[in-house]
Length: 370
Length: 234
Image (cartoon, rainbow over all chains, first blue to last red):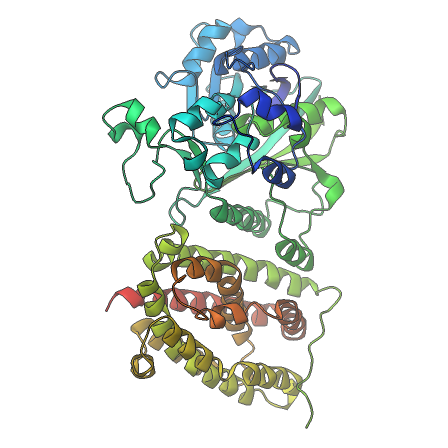
């Protein structure tokens, strides 16, 4: 049995925020403008994004609120009512509550009775994990449909007060600031069913390859600023102490980040070798890249190897919608499908290379019409 | 005296050449992950690498570098008249690198090591296996598979220059001019890649040649990783 995406939805909170307004929104650390902001923004290429917090840092939409809004939009354009949803598969990097699972909060928000619930946890690729669980549930025939909801509220991590609590501008280095100018908020949802309705997207296969055995953590929260200190946030006596030691800041190890490009290429070549992927026949690539483009050397090699994916097959809305972590790929798919760029019979790959501790996932799908 | 034959970069690789390049890339990425798992190299990734680590690394690389010219020249001499052009390219390559070990020795001394120590350092078990394997393959008639070994060794040279050198320089700030060997392999990178593409085009004529190249690349990668693992198994 196949699984089909019959509807999509997305939610981006508030108006688009420009690069010049970002710092005003998130706040000046120790009252001083960042020296790294422009450099980091130039590298990631993002021009606008959305925040679920206002300038006074009041949360206007919770992560669950955004997920519910995206799900409602998705269901409103489907032929199912909320009550008919049989499986709810949710993902987030960081929900509003530490416990219980994020899916419970979404279910309560949507008021779906007696649903089969699933929550995945991770960084960007947890969205793919949530989709795969939903697709497999439909494939084995356990459920006729599944709603996937993915939401991210990163901006709460980036308030100036967070950095000040961890030592302020003196204690904040490039790795701790990098994601402040990268991540933003939003949610996406898709409805999967065991039959197509009108224009649908058939899921052909989903694969992922994780490399946490080979590489250290590249992006995370929980370790203190002092690299010699092996404690994680809950090992401190109080959360206040953990925060003062920088253990609640989100960090990205920039030098390790390069590996994600190679691992993305490695996975792609593996799928080609296995006969699952034919880059010549592929029509669209929706790739959740954070900012780093293929290094010219690797791109050159792929071209020589006859596996280049030409520029006009790439689709991304990173530059206008921002990098919303795990939600990005669904927000991108929603915009892609609504843009009408895809034609019936065309194929696409949704690729999520996650740098958390290096997991690369791929979804191959075909546009079909009933 | 004539210069070695220059391998030109082909415009397009043949179908089997492209397939081989895809397989070589995957073999390379696998090798990189093997390297990343070696505790000494992981310390580089975690910013915990020390000058003592660096001295250990150089000490253990030297036997392989000094023996490197042996398998490359042996490889060249094993190519018969049908591969005279390939032989010439390899002789040129051997000529370029046959005194690299001297640079490495000077780096070792410049980061606080004693020259007599590095001169008497024997091969570690991994270097022994790597050297033995490469000499054995190089002794076969027309050892086209050694293109796979060059892919790994050349690739690592580039990785050392572009990734390792800067990190190592962080941990050797108190010493001057001690990463010349690592840095030097980043030079003429374009030219090296063109040469490799040219060799792939020339040598990868059928599946059997491609399979043997990949096999030798895989074995070289595993034995190279073993050589690095053995640094701390004394």
